[in-house]
Image (tube, rainbow, N blue to C red; front, side, top):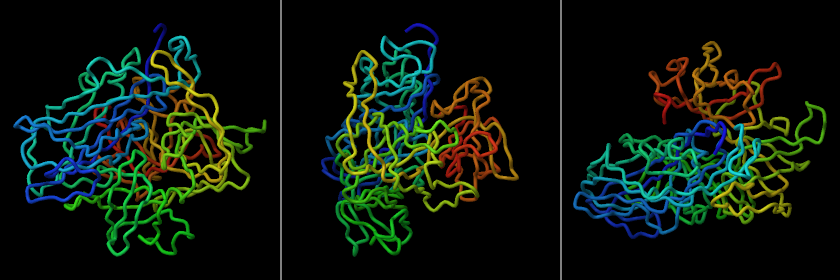
Length: 516
């Protein structure tokens, strides 16, 4: 590769939560335990590269096992189905992936196996990538896994670990994207500090446990329980309690929030609060995503489309990179580029999760759209059209698979940005989020960047509902200029008076030493 070239991407977190017990041959996540078992969970995060924008990076987890002190291997994945992890959408989030039973005892290492990496980038360098990815274009590649790097064994800290009967134990698996993607755009997972692990605290928060999105299969009202099937084919049993919140359900589904809101075929997102001794997961929150028989996908807006030459005219559509196909609907390839037209009757809403937005921020029409937003888009039936197909070539860049459809509904979801705290305004509980002084890491969707990236800032508005992780104190008062942080929140266009885009911050996470 010739010319100046570097990588810049998003940072992410993905979670595998695995339940330790006696048996490893279960076919779903509902497991019995014995007196010699304990719950165990695992999470995975990444650290992004710097340079061109990584819009999509997915890798399949095909194996996860603990190696006991006696030398025996205990599988943590109780199904042979690979689990696809889109690490680019998890800067400040975690995703629950699996559960299994493992006997109590001492374990010396965690062994992970990966396959099928897929990469979509925007080439904003000053040279083409290979012979096909021109400057200023969105391109897709199936990178090669460097020899021997598909399997990773983690035996350093926090190992060895002792799993004690009845004592939950969790691991965070850190996936450092800027380290594992090499200069030739191959992927080396075994490179030093490419994939690392740490131990979760004894009582992980729901954010650390992560969430699950899937289709409701059954609802057992008298047992306060339902089952959820994920897009990769796994079924989980979910317990609800009096503390579980139910959000975003339409009034047609239920008159009052509760388990009665759930129905077979719905797609919901579940925030996991814990692992029960019976193998079921406990939900802290259940959020409505899609009605039965509808098709809703999630993606990042990378371009707005307007049929008017008037700059102030609202867009008539947008282009997005697809990140989630909740019900695994046919025709919506992850990493694909979708051109979305907005129906005249399209509805606009926010998944606010009970968060009270700062004054003046709303998502009520196409005029509220902006590049960088994460949105859930519901297809108007019969409007899907396949465009150019991509073979995801091993040795060359290609355009991503393309499709077009019309949206009957658009819902704003929290986006994620990572950068340096550039200014503080304590009177308004806000701060600026921009680039490191040395020109280092700053993670934002590529079209949002100004030509002089050092001057680009997001305006981050916080409220008393904003959560803080890693600060001292864990509140707005713990923020300081030049801290490196990840922000999860709802993204809005710049205010009429100018300035950068606005983020209503749901959570802020400190990244010590500009690292993840």
